[in-house]
Amino acid sequence: MITLEHVYWLTGLMAGGVAIVNLRDRSNPRRLNNTAFWGIYAITFLAGSYLPDIVSGFLVIGMVLVASIRGLGQGQQKATREEEAANAARWGNKLFLPALTIPVLTVLGTFGLKRIEFGGGPLVDVKQVTVISLAIATLVALAFGMFLLRPPLLAPIREARRLLDAIGWAAVLPQMLAALGALFAIAGVGGAVSGLATRWLPLGTPFAAVITYSIGMAVFTMIMGNAFAAFPVMTAGIGLPLIVQRFGGDPTIMSAIGMLSGFCGTLMTPMAANFNIVPTALLELPDENAVIKVQIPTALLLLAANILLMNFFVFPS
Amino acid sequence: MLPLIGVVVVVIGFVLRINPLLVVTVAGLTTGIASGLNFLEVVAAFGKAFITSRYVGIVWLVLPVIGLLEHAGLRERARAVISGFRAATTSRVLLVYFAVRQVTSALGLTSLGGHAQMVRPLIAPMAEAAAENRYGDIPAAIRHRIRAHSAAADNIALFFGEDIFIAIGSILLIRGFLEQNGILVEPAQLALWAIPTAICAFVIHCTRLILLERRLRADLSVAAKVEQ
Image 1 (tube, helix red, strand yellow):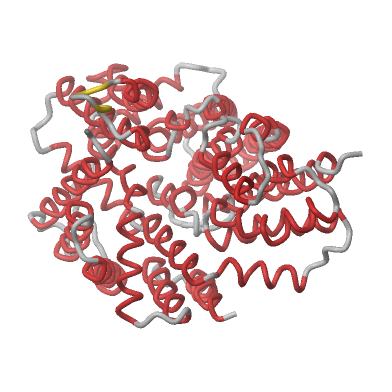
Image 2 (image 1 turned 30 degrees about the horizontal axis):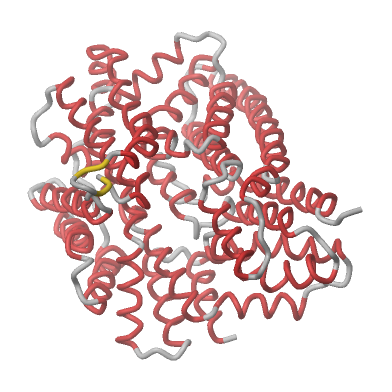
């Protein structure tokens, strides 16, 4: 059966390749730092499931120290826009086909792979079917691209290295934040925040309870970087005892709109790095808060809309 | 109160613009120590949490093929396609992408978009090319604003589309949590009540995208005059 573990191995192989290409590139003055950073990252993917937790912990700390104190660099190889334009004229619209193969095959795989059986069991781990489909789709698209363009055999890993070094440490930040969220959960950060909220915030009227719950979802999501972490805490602390039990609100409507209020918070926080910080690196924006700044007006207006919607619909008339 | 020390570390670190990886690590270690673990236990907990969060890094698997196609001119090709449409504007490109992304997410097809596989190689170059068509060369600051809007359109359309699909993670989380508290709800009902917010998101963000085009026109005609 194909499981998440195999996809981790594949990701680890790619990161390891990136480390090796960096090691051999003398045009990057910090090549050894890059090699160490991506090399350790590769180890966490290839061997992470077998390493003792304490070893993984020190590996991660090592990566962080390399990136933050020694600093990562980039090699010189960079295609110019003219070069890309000349290539584009040569290949034409065929270039879109491998690119579109990825989303199309991922979607097909998500629905189709569940049904395929192999040796008496399912071919893939059904719980992880989307991620496994993405990995398979990427491999197919890569094979298609290689067949179409016939580049040197090592070109894909050199290109991956160019992009991954352009993204730099931001590539690892989402995973670090997910780990931080897990530590916050162990330490009971959620209970502490909802304790503060119920003690200090106005909750006497139904409308005040709705406002506190919705804004609380948004703010708490901004702190945790994830509405999924905020929802149980805010709903157990404010939503269920006040909006549902004291004021007779509908739990379905409250939860649905409450979660979406949390999503407004996701749009406004650097803690949701995969949505807000990684794209600034991918799009080569000098200001790492550029995407958040563009999203804030929509997020605030939508939060206000959520408060009004919840207040209007949640209480039976 | 003590567990909140990690939150304080994060806020201070981000405000002082210290390397976020370092900030997050220090926040994690202090949070763990504040909750009564010793140093080695905290390091182990952090390592374990990092390892179990590896699924977040799988998205980078698309980089080899995207890089290969970019080198072969994918982004230039995306620009050229848009140059063929005289009616294309930055706001229209982003409006169409927003609508498609929100509707497909609502149907559960959340993997049709994404920053590495769609926004960087296709959507951002198209939005930039539409502005170049209209206004000629555009200054870097405005180019960056257009790129940031491309990423924002992907995020907002995804967040406020996906909750309409009944099998998405957040719906299942809500259902599971309410069930633990003795309240049974139907996923279809939860999905239904995501629709009003989805409509508001569409109206609010599309209005902003239309206003974006006006601002581009104002800023870029001023810039053009200064150059003359």
